[in-house]
Amino acid sequence: MIESMPVEPSPGAGLRIEGLSRRLGQRTLLAELNLEVGPGECLALLGPSGCGKTTTLRLLAGLDAASAGRILLDGSDITQQSAGERRVAMVFQSYALYPHLSVADNLALGLRIRGMPAKEREGRIAAVLELLQLTELRLRRPAQLSGGQRQRVALARALLRQPRLVLLDEPMSNLDAQLREELRPELRRLLCGGEQPVVYVTHDQQEAMGMADRIAVLRDGALQQVGSARELYARPANRFVAAFLGRPAINLLPATGPRQLGLRPEHLQPVAQGGLAARLLRREWWGNQQLLWLESAQGDLRMLVAADQELPPALQLGWRPEHELWFDSHSGERLPGP
Amino acid sequence: MKEQRLKPTLVNSLLMLPALLLLAIVFAWPLLDSAWLSTQASSVLTGLTPLANGGANWQRLLGDARFWQDAAVTLRFAGVSVALELLLGLAMALLLHQPSRGRGWLRALTLLPWALPTTVLALGWRWIYNDPYGPLNAILRACGAAPFGFLTTPASTWLFTVLADVWKTTPFVALLLLAGLQSIPAELEESLVLEGASPLQILRRLTLPLLRPWISLALLFRLAQALGVFDLVQVLTRGGPAGSTESLALYAYLNAMRFLDFGYSATLVIATFLLLVLLTALGWLLLRRRPLELS
Image (cartoon, rainbow over all chains, first blue to last red; front, side, top):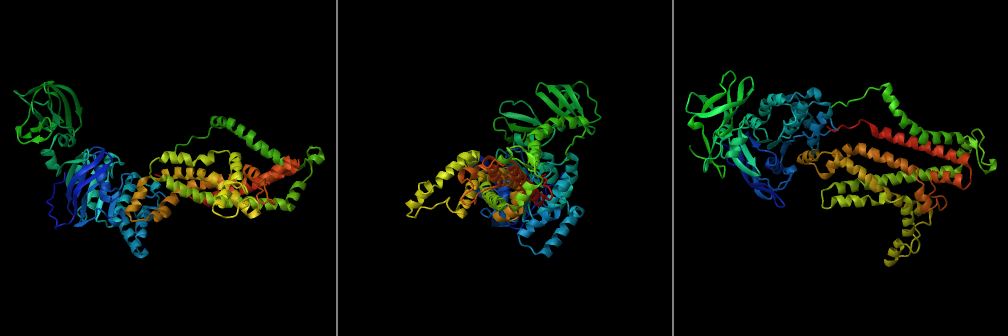
């Protein structure tokens, strides 16, 4: 997990989103979004499909028009600027490589359109190809590349633009799990920590936690919470954030009056006596840990324990009070303290 | 993304037999029969009995000024008509591709001219061009101009025949190219928009290259059809005036049905067929290059 770094930008530097909204007829795709992303900071937009994360990205890119609100980039208002004027780079989920062009020509096309002299263009392309270890593939066409290679070409094209803002739309969702894991540090090394803010859209909480300095969780077009992975995990703003972050998911006990208790699976533990009586239903052994499915008077529960821990079929469950997460059973907002 | 291919086995080959047989009956046999007939004298003079006459039909063809004029008319007709159809069809496809209200209805409407039988359409145009009573002349008169004989001089008859053909077949080209446009993922265009490309640059750098297989397809289809044009000219102009719109197919038809010279008609049919094969093969070679693979 990456610790959130204190971002103290010079005034106005970075990306600032103020009251950004998009409505389509009666539907609100994005409602009053306020966010700040510092220079070199990587912010993940996380949420289920239809939550507004891709909408936000398209608004930032200038591919769709905002219904209300402002986008400020390094202090200047770019809300009314066209997509071509913004100097924003975007990596699409499908990579959007031009299928009729070689890798080198895929990179060159944008620079050609901007009218960069051939000599400067060639130099820049060669450097980016080198950086991403694509030099040997430069004459291939996208159809002749593997998924990971295509993704590197898409990244190269984004970097080549020397963008003021980098947007990534589920850039790894077409890759297999192992490659995704391997690529995360590389992606961070290449994109983050430079001058430009990075906005990274994903529905994968693990990817968001692994990639981003801060995470913004969206649901139905509304921002739920923004903060470091640690903050979101330990102090979720509401039931939705608590349930969306963390696998296996948090145990939400039946509401008792106005309050509802949430307990993370790794915070449950067997106790000698006086705990919540439970019966073991099923066990998933994962090698490094095991997930236990339990039945109790408080409904079915998930408990995560060490892989070698032996447990009887009937047991008592306990937890530490500081691990209790209490929610308003009606609104779902987290309540302070037990 | 490797295509799975079946290995050719005896059983697989045998399964192809019915299709091959059908093709042989409806395509190869008539063609071979015509080729054979082109080496025979078979007309009223021989009592319609085929008699071998060596290469006399072919010799006659080479010296036949009417054949050469009709070949030129057919080539010019096909060339200009297909070029116009491609240009207009592309423009129409680009317009129909834009998101708009009632796009489905608009697309269906566009296809109507193509769905009309050519004979009906040709009769319609003959009335539209009618001098002096047709609708076009009514408009001219309403504007205070003198009526115009659209189908009276060779040059204008040729031109207005081409326009009638363009009107009918442009929707076909548009539909084909529209299918091509829809196969291009939207992100490709968006990516270029982010690079600061103008609509014209997008058309030139992205849309046209990716449309090339579809353009080739439309071109080949239309070229083959236009080189064999028959019903339009038969109904609209009967090949006149002064043979200015007489196509090779019409000439072959006249030889068989009017002059009852089946041997020479078959010679014309085979000559037209060879011309068609030659031109479509040429078009195919020019446009083929590397096939595009959309990932």
